[in-house]
Image 1: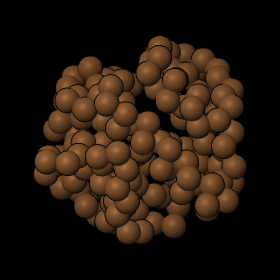
Image 2: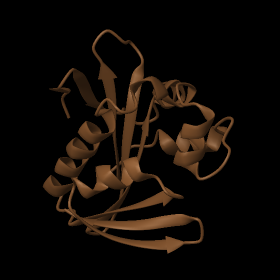
Image 3: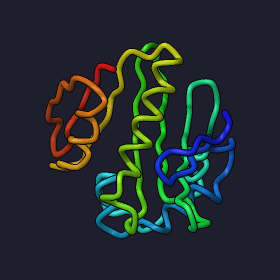
Image 4: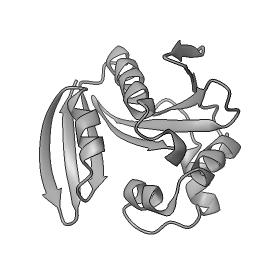
Amino acid sequence: MQSRYVDGLTIRALRDGDTETVAALFARLGDRSRERRFCGAKPRLSDLELTTLARVDRGRHVLVAYADGDPGPVGIARLVRDGDSAEIAFAVADDYQGRRVGSILASELAADARAAGIAQLTATVCGDNPRVIALLERLGSLDMSWQGRERGIVVGI
């Protein structure tokens, strides 16, 4: 995939094994953002977690966003395919939250998913996270259920 430019963001696919980019984005997340993304306190990523999050193959697709004038990654969106559905997850640097980075990444990832024949996306949302729910609602129809303190979401795209 070549880079795409959307509303002040350069979006590119993560290269397989690019742990530096994953670590750089993780370093830009505050405690609250990490808690929401990983459903609990997460002061650091283990080597195994870093390797897993940086894996790209036939079933794993990861997009990285870079903002004009900022050399570091400002957001990451990941898709892990399972047949005709795929689990998605997002992380946006604290300084860029509320600036449409997540929405743009979600839209681009959903377009890539549709092009790959994926009919639905699934996500696990930690607790009540209205921003992520709103972002997912813009992608398609939602079916939500509570699983303990997490919300399971299926998005028809």
